Image: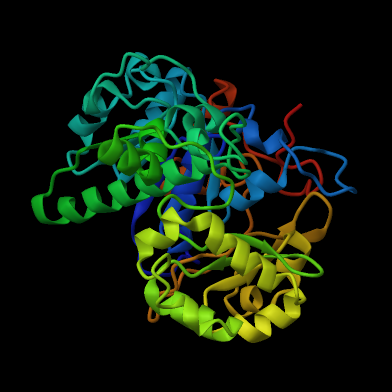
Amino acid sequence: MSPSASGALSGIRIIDLTQALSGPFCTSLFADHGADVIKIEPPRGDMIRRTGPFAEDDEHKDFGNVFQNANRNKRSLVLDLKVPEGRQAFLDLVRTADAVVENFSMGVMDRLGLGYESLAEINPRLVYTSIRGFGDHRGGRSPYAHWPAFDIVAQAMGGLMSITGPEADIRVRVGSGIGDSVPGLFAAFGTMTALFEAQRSGRGQYVDTAMVDSVLAVSEVAVNVYDATGRSPQPIGNQLQGFAPFDTVRAKDGEVALGAPHRPQWTQLCQIMGRPELIEDPRFDTDNKRWTHRGEVYAIVKEWAARYTVAELKGLLGGKVPLGPILDAKAIFADPHFAARQMLPTVENPRTGGTTQITGPVSKLSRTPATIRRRAPLLGEHSEQVLREAGYGPEKIRALQTAGATTIPDPTDHVLQGVTP
């Protein structure tokens, strides 16, 4: 276990074979809460290391902000699993692990002789989690099982793009990588569930998470509307099927998001607007009627909101009716809420000598809080440390290096350490 680890998951060891975003996001949740997450990378490193954005003064372009955010609190060990010596070192680590998480294409680990069944023979308590575009055959064989997938594919086939956009003929993806981060969340939950059960039974199990399934699970509008009506819902901008008012409205100097779809909120809004007669108006006196007559509802609300500035609307509605200004990144970095919640902690950027702000832990535990203890690792930064903990002496480590199974960065070369040629 890392000597600096703390938190609710201190003592848990996760072997992280993931790359890109979905898997690293999953395992970062464990690392934030104190688990010892050993990120095993091939000699070339995680592909997302070389994906921007980068700081303007970063000349190396191999330690991007996406990688930094998704891999904080982890240790990096280089192992080439295609080399026999690398596979053996991996198996030695598995013996002491609580979980393995990977997001390779289906069958990759099996072809290496490192699939779940093989690993479970040497560690029956092992929880093995995979994240794939369409899942693994162990959880239900999809006809698309061998299709590669990215976030945009998961959003498209999971139903989210069908209900996102300004109008029916324009479908758009959600601006962030929901097709990666949501599967990461479900995979983390499934892994934690299996780890909890393993404490009772002494037996691990396979946790199969599909990106497309995960997106479908949070596309409840598509499922609920189709099941109830037989019709596929269409994009309706910022509104939400069945809820009104629930939209963005324009003020004198900007826009705000406003939601008052239920009677208590609608009543409060009508009183603040100076229109108490609308509360019992037969067009608007139930939640469903307000949705049915939403055109009239929005005409009233938007005409009223347009009289005020964003600041004035915050003063009138803040704390009474759900309302929020639309914050861009600059506003978020300056907003006191995110500072108070420690949602933008600062870590070192070893490539520039400066610092980087990343997103902080969301779940705030009162007694064993999650913490950001270290920046994301340079490639192979902890190879020697982790191998020594596994019982490898200097000669055995040198043998791994000679076989091309691992790399040990020069500890005195702080600039070039971890750079992939």
